[in-house]
Length: 356
Picture 1: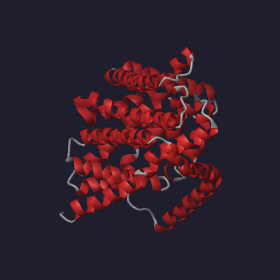
Picture 2: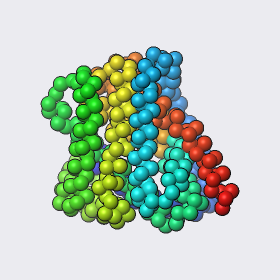
Picture 3: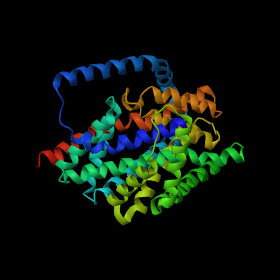
């Protein structure tokens, strides 16, 4: 709970500062060079430390042909649905600019964020620039991207709560139909919970008080949190102020973004013949998303592979199947978007820059 409270506090501060990151002027060149060298050195050391896990994961490439083509197609479709939810959410927050502007900028920004250390801000800056080039007003872009990131990250922070009833009930799901129902239940429960948190102040303030009280009790020597409930309310109001009366649709799109991504991991596990308890897979999935936020390697590269493989093993998946499932999931969620993002940037350059 201590780490969770700190993570909520840090995540809110990080997402709130996105506008300043996007529009910040370049700093003193020497300082930038020193900082860049330090970050690259740290990235190199980190990649060296996680290299064994990366090598094991990449070694599963030869085993990919053992997966049924239907499962590979299913994972591709689920990732496309994940992207569609992100595009729809961003377009709604941006007050419905043309679809190509949103799609191309998101694909390119997402790809950059996956290959640059600390790439979240760089990816957001690239998307900001591409959207402005396509005719979307700059201030509204910064505000919309901030609100979308806050909403999307808030949903993934709520996901672990859904595993609690499954722990109480116990049992291991081995029925593929039940796995599909679990995926739908994740979507429905998150949508209902999110509706309560957005529609009224009470539940959100209660969540903030619980996290704040637990964090302060467990970390008595640290600077205590004092206004977490109020900060959660402010950020919630910021999101609602951007999406307006269509917040229910925005919430559904944010939930769909994670539900389809989670379903991709379930499909990868089913493809290798593993049917672990969905609640434990959900916790492994959430852990992987947190690891992906580690800024010292691009997109959490290496950390996600090592962490997700280990957590799937704890969920009851055999070591070999955990490695192969991790590789299949990361292939569709991390590697394939890279060339797609490069193509999207080239298309944007031809479509908007040359016509501008």
